[in-house]
Structure formats: structure tokens, C-alpha cells
Image (cartoon, rainbow, N blue to C red; front, side, top):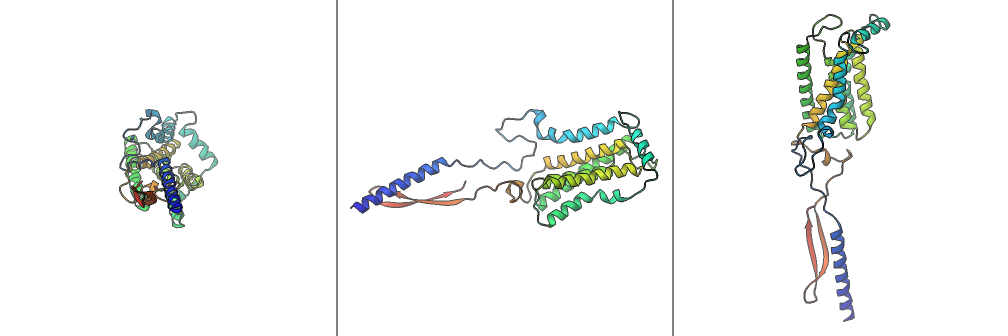
Length: 278
């Protein structure tokens, strides 16, 4: 009799402790809707002020670069394109090098090499390929429209497709993607990519193919194209970044079985089994 009473008391105490512990565990927040655009506010959330939105923040640096480029066109601005070309011609007379034709793709080579060595980027291959295609289309279309609209003469007089620099836009687009994909691993990947892109811009001026204004505007167009591609991307293919291990985001908890003893009516001892689908 004593043993049965002690067993019932133990089971009752264990059951109460299990229920108390279970009540203290808060359910995790539901996963975010992956079909929303990055700059959309989730339903029910308090909207941010417009100046703190993701789209505005993503446009600040490109707007500064493009704005500075426009401000120094020809002889305008504190240090104009004419001033920059005059100093370059004085310090690097007769400079000619085609390295910039290949160096514009170097951030992509950096990204491919890092991924090949097993470092996980922010996105899987399917989503990364779609973002690359979208950003390239945005950049190429923007550069072409601006070149045709401005009809600006190159410093070497070869044609009227100077503003903005397509090589620089391509290099900074690739560098921005490298930075976004690998910044959770190390910021130095992005630093290296932007250093390569800056070298491309410098070579375009040294080779007398572009003005200072063209290079700064091209950098802004490239970065903005990458940002817009990420902000507007819908994760309907492959896996979302939050569902990928090793990129600084935690995985959602998996469904589990739970069981614990329980005291049944009439003094019997039973077992409670529960499926917890988080």
C-alpha cells in the first residue's frame, strides 16, 4: 500500500512539473512570409517612417555617388572632371592598359572561388543566380539609357557614350553582391571586392576612357542595381536565407514528440503522448 501511494504521489508531482515547465516555454514566433518583397511591411506590423525604410537606406550611398558624379560633370564642382583629367595627364602621361577590361569581373571570380572552397553565402545557388540575372539586367538597362540620354563625349573623343562608366558599374555591382553574400562570414570579402572595383574606376580614368563624373556615377548605378535586385527578390525557389545553416541565421525548431506519465481517474497510472509542431 505504501509503495503504491508513493508511486502515485511521484507520478502526480512529475506530471505537475511537466505541465509547469511546458507552460513556461513560449512558442517561437511564426516564420516571416517569404513571398513579401524585402521593402514591404509585414501585415500587422507598425510601419517604419519612410526615411528609415530599407529602400531609402539602400539608396543613400548610390544617390551620393551619382549625385557627386553629376555635380562634377565637365568643369563644374569643387574638383571637376576637367581638373581630374588634367592632373592624371600630368602625372601619368601616355598611360595605356587593358587590365580594366578583365578586372571588372574579378569580384565574381572572388565569389566563385570562395563558394568553391565550401564557404556558404547568404543565398543558395538558385536564388543567387536569379539575383545576379536581375541585377545585371537592371544595371545594363540603366547604363544604356543614361548613355544614350546624356550623349556625353569621352575624354579621348572616341564616341558619345561616356556617362556613366559601364565598366565601373559592372565592377561595383559584382562587389556589392560579394559583400551581401559573404558579410556574415567576414567583412574582408567585401573590402577586397570593393578595392578591386575601385581599381577598375581608376583605370578607366587613367586610360582616358572616362571622366571622373562617369566613374562615380557608374559606381552608384552598380551598387543601386544590386540593392534593388535583393530588395525586390521573392524566395520562391530554393531555400530562404533564414533556412540555411552557417550564414548567421538559426534554423526553426523541428516538430517533436513529447510524452510524460499522468495520473488517470480512479487511481490508475497512464502515459500522455503529444505531437508538438512548433
